[in-house]
Image (cartoon, rainbow over all chains, first blue to last red; front, top):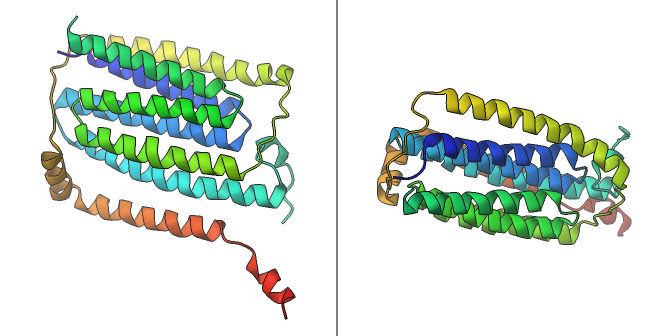
Length: 101
Length: 172
């Protein structure tokens, strides 16, 4: 016997909120992307706990797709960060205050 | 409290603490190293909750590929630290208050659901069973996911290319 389902969901909520706080309150673009990664990981944890509760493999399959989405998201996101750092010379989100082409 | 419960709570404490350490670091490199610990503990949690294949994937993809990619980008990009402490308090406070409120509401909501206090039995889905299930039931989303990865690859290549047109114009 492991712990109740509620405890697993509570852990997933804590992780998700930590990621959300990170990506809301930091101004560094890299830290914002790290917050998104933490949130995706927390969603995967909730899916796997649900998969264990209902004895269905669908939840684990969803986590597989979350991994694919996270990998492609971080590849494109980091390329965007490098691109905008090359354009503006900064990775601070507050510095992007002009829409010059 | 069984041994599995003790393992779960220890791993949960490690995950929450290292994630908390990661999001309050000022340097991105320290945050990435803390997150690697967090992801490895999450992989152990996945194994405890009956997903050994996904635990291996978590170590390979999250702790391996994604975090190493972050480390390379941190080395490439110049990160300036010009945040003053006073403005930082005003930025952290609303987010933390909202997070605490959502945590309380979510906790009340979870423990109001009947049956949320019954301990779950252990289970284990072997990688062979999991793979057979995925490719029998979800073969079309797998194709879409591979297409998404291809698009991500092309997009990253397009965004990361050098501006070579001006250089070739300058050259005779």
